Image (cartoon, rainbow, N blue to C red; front, side):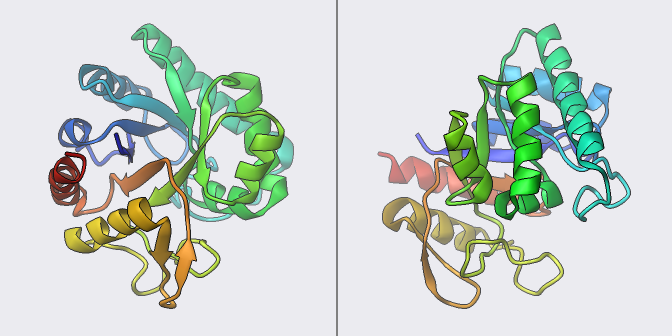
Length: 239
């Protein structure tokens, strides 16, 4: 079965529509978005629809939604990530559900993918708080390779609603063509990744990629429509 994941708990309040359409979710941990109440509601929905839950830690920067590099010390950032994971651990324990994975958010995700400094901060926090959880991270990224060296379980992640550069970095949201809103294009990207293990970059090059889980962002205005279509196509594909 193809695993479709979604970033949730970010104040969009569409989780009741998203949960029936996904198999794992990444819950904001009250740093870039969310609240304890939102976390509790999202966990309850995930439990209802048998969706695996994951922590979605970020730079502690609500003003920029965690999407900008933050000037913060290594110690403070690791403590923040640990606190975010601990919050989700406590809330999930109250509803008797285990945390399946950890997926960094926004700028933290992007910098940990290419920079050992940020990658090790994330992995240190994960090892300390959720050593049995999977790490969701990009194929052939620095954080993924370091996680393997440290015997942390990993799942390769790819995106259905974002475009890629030749080096498999995501096209900046500030640039045209960074976001995919057309459901047919999202499906074409997924199908190519599944069947050929490749993606067409924004520079129109064929790039090799592997993925165990595929993300649609919950704050994408077209997320629900996209997921309904992708689920219908997957049902046909998996027959």
